[in-house]
Image (cartoon, rainbow, N blue to C red):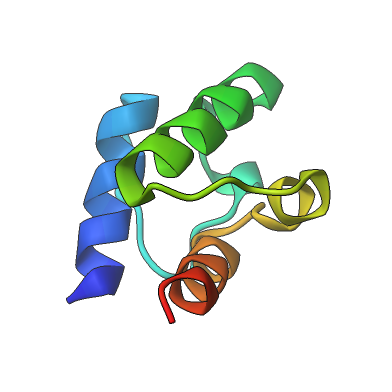
Length: 75
């Protein structure tokens, strides 16, 4: 399932100590600060072979938003 894959990917990329779920947002994860966000966006672009716009990167502040944008791009 894509949701589980993305949650695991975010956890590994950020080296987060907390659980990551569909309800997780930036505010919930200490490692998901501004630098962590940049690292995560680059990792998502590489993993899913997509190029994100600045607006998309700014919208991707929660697992649900990340999932939505990746799904849109995979169509």
